Image 1 (cartoon, helix red, strand yellow):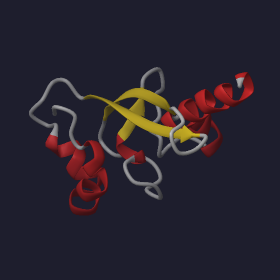
Image 2 (cartoon, rainbow, N blue to C red; image 1 turned 120 degrees about the vertical axis):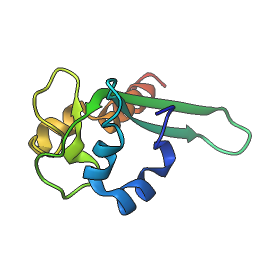
Image 3 (tube, rainbow, N blue to C red; image 1 turned 135 degrees about the horizontal axis):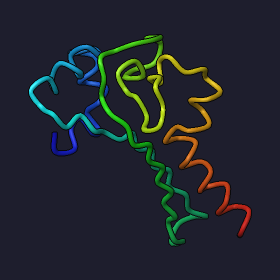
Length: 112
């Protein structure tokens, strides 16, 4: 889908719900997707900006599981049989795009 929904994910979910996101891909054989989280940090004005990007590859599937957080029911990370909506919060929080970005941020602080 050429990077969609990208930063418009909240609009997509508000208007289409997870089912609509899945249905949009009905005509496509490639349902790959990725979740991405980017944190940026600077020590102050004029200082370098450090960017930490976490990415979780997966695919869009028919929604399954809890619907308490956005697109979790229709995103299945690569290597797992469960959607984010079906996983325990502990597993999701270990493998998510946010966890990966935060791990990079943590490594930066540990080195510097």
